[in-house]
Amino acid sequence: MSPALLPLNFQLLETKLIWIQDRLLVKSRKTNAITVENIPAWLVRQGRLVVVMGNERIEAGVGHWMFPRQGQGWVHTLPNSKILSVHFRLRWPNGQEVYRRRQTLVLPAQKCPELTQAATHLLNHLDGETMWYADQWAPASCIDYFAMQSHFQRWLAAYGSIMEAHGETQITVNDVTAPALEAWKVLMDWDLAKPFSRKILSRHLGLSIPALSRRFTAYYGATPRGFLEQRKLEWAQQRLAQSQERIKVIAAELGFLNLAQFSNWFRLHNQLSPRDYRNFAKGINSP
Picture 1 (cartoon, rainbow, N blue to C red):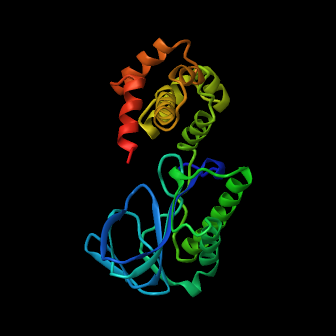
Picture 2: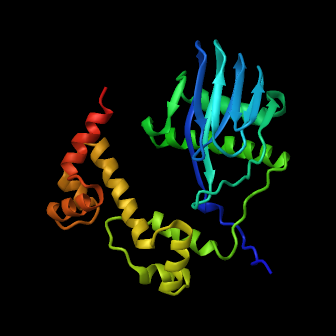
């Protein structure tokens, strides 16, 4: 007998707009823009778009949206094609997408009015920018951030309606995976300056420490402690690469008692000192 399904906790979903572009491509292009990481969608405003995934070759003409199936593939654009491209995430913490995407859909824009309107609102919010990347965006204010998120949520609602209208069912979460997902939520909200406590986490979820560790490791390939350590490392790397803050301050933000303790921890995980990593990252990202 299969395990009983639990009510879905949609607060665990990872939703993120990765980029949105709306530009004229003067020359023919071929890119591997279909990955297993993000969900792409394209609206052909001018020219033609061709997607190749394995032996499958699908074209979209002017006025059509294309939603590729799950997998990896290549995207070809003809010269002088104008393409609205949206890449985003809509998935559970274990990486599973909410919708299965078993087929590639090519639909007239007239049949996707809410999606097209949501994309238009996103573009209008960008004040004429033709290429927008989340990782390079600095909101002007809280209101600016909230407005962008509101437009994106409208996009997701329209996208979900299209998927369900074409039989793309939701991937559900059962009682085996749910504790791991709940643990992920707690760890994502964990104050990185505070030490990790297995007792607090297991008590919060109502599981024994061995059961929690076993389920979480089976789902994510790391113990809860290891997962939190990776979060701290990624946060430290981002602060070192993208800020001018003193390394001593970054160490304190992560709860380290002194700079030497932080440096030893960082070198253990990264094979570079924090200063060397910062210099390396700044060199990579410079023009």
